[in-house]
Image (cartoon, rainbow, N blue to C red):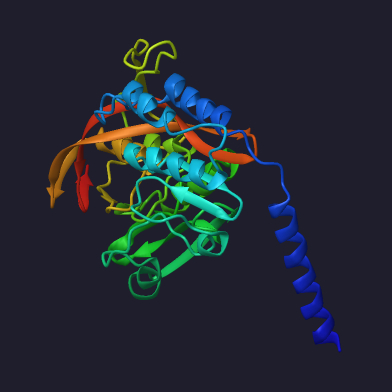
Length: 336
């Protein structure tokens, strides 16, 4: 009887949700389309770099939108536009459907989303393998709960001893919890300050916020270095930018770095804010480079924006800053 009541409850909830969706007020396709284009026109920084004529795109798609355009048709058009941008920081969603640009994936429903992971499948990294086979002892810190992909509860920091008194630290992401990040980094450096060397591992790091983790890079520098140059988009023109701003790391007086060698590990899944962290570490004097590939890398910082127009909710991360930087992508480099 109890199971029957549960099944009946589930069916009723499903019916109510379906009824709400089917009887909802229809959206305003023209207004939604105009708002979508307006926000990108005023804020997106990378049209020129991606060789996209945004005015031409507007002329083309605006002819396909009218008051009779259905929600499905409008959503598919907006997906098509985002696909052209090919930008992993942009996505759009509506009822039980979300589309990510830049991943060459179809739209996902929310059940798909629970298992979705931004990181590409690779065979070059396993944190569990490192913990079980290479670390003599280890500990984890900074618990995070994420409702964005990859969803779940996890620890950001894994620290421990490798052989020959080498200290190891891995970061799963660049957390915005400044105080907790400071505590974890400070605890690591206090415990392992006399290590013979350091392995800093940001493989499979999904990014996030670079400034809290900047503290770790500043412990390892003895001079002030510029690690990136940013230029804000001028909202009045797609192709105009404000004066450059130079981003720097500076020595941290609270920790006396003893010039131990440092190995920084990255892979194809080191992304977004983790790439900024890589640039910070790259300013340190490099003694040996392994498996180096030189390329021009396009780096963007983002500001999350939410909009609701009509009945379609779309969310994307405004491209506020566009930077082209020269970056050495490598599997391992040693710094002394």
